Length: 262
Image (cartoon, rainbow, N blue to C red; front, side, top):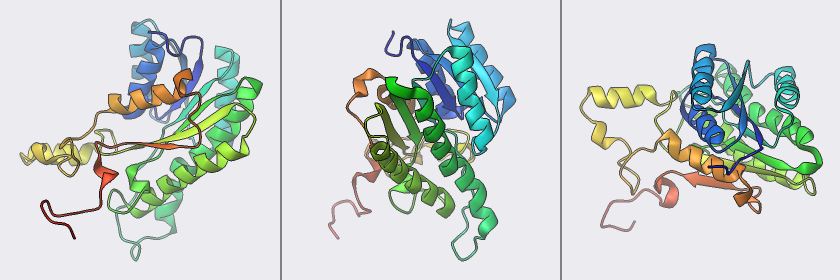
């Protein structure tokens, strides 16, 4: 497999979940990857798995909302891997599930820092590093950014911001050859959702997970990774400024009662 042969990629949130699955897949498809996360143990484990499979992986531990750190990661990628063609800004946090009337500023700032500022910095420094050769920047948004009901308020707003950000960036990078797109995952078993999955299994309700979408199941991190692989590859050379939804069909309909039309 060689859909990313010769490409150099940065992947944030690579210590687990979608980031780890994507890093493994990108490496298997020929990319040299730089893994970024705050969780050192998870980073080391992801890198070890990639290297054991014959891939190339380098590590950078830190905060994706820190401008100096992100700039440094891009510099390290160019220095250690020889360049940059793909930046997958995947890192994210969930934040508070309290209502708007209960939230305060401290509930918002950490979520916006990671979920929205992080992708902005990835685009800013990634696009500069890609230069005339162009490249692909991918940001993880969410179905929670499409409409209410799929996440807490700060989280949902941050993901809506990501979708607008990729549109704005795609336009402002006109002529550079840099494509900017987002993926909107539905219900995926990751670190963010693990508590919910564990609770459902403990209560014997695992079969109800994902029951609201037409496929009647939750998604897997590997299924999001394959969407990221497409956007990272030259196969997506004419895809730009888009948010691709991967949610089992959840967002294809408004709420309804089966057999009745409201």
